[in-house]
Image (cartoon, rainbow, N blue to C red):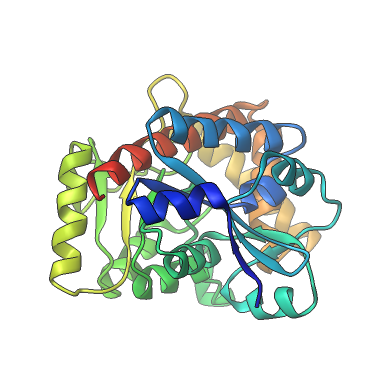
Length: 299
């Protein structure tokens, strides 16, 4: 398998510098053009501004790439039919020479293989609403249970069953930390109606937690839930209303599986007149900034 680590990333790892993994489904499936390309570049710049090195992970032409050049980011953003690649799809994508964005699960797995312990994303997947009928549970949760990577996110996507997702993470022994908050965020909103199981208030505290978890050999990942910055979030009421409309539309159109999340995010953005996309662009940069700050304490 071709596992290509960008020179900048390889040197940073060899020198013990802070490195932050970034997923690529936000480019291929999470945002419309040209916002996908512009946001991907902006997020990488945020990591660099904090003194760390970004490593956007993707599969391009069957090659696993740990860190993309600017031209490759642009190529991925413009690719016509990219595959959404989770753990399940990795071997297939590589063997068939495919191009696609890696999900949270696949990015975690590949980041760990490359020796990167910090990963910033928008929001993680979880237990879907109506799971008792569909058994639709994101592979992100199982990956968090097995892969030693700290994931900086804005909680779980608001389209999910948050109560069941938190219960699942607890069962799997995955620590869930609220960053500077007692409340567990719901992606576009800084509050989900649920409390965060733990709270930490600074990069140094989080780094200490990560180190002690490693020393205890507990295995698995960590969820560090960072609320969307003040002034950019969406009220719980507006979010739920937009989600209700979008879920109904998805059901009417028979959309299921991997197609659900991209469809719902697109429709929710339309129902909120662009407010969810605006929040998404801000929160992913915020998560990357915090992740980069923590990465420097881990070297």
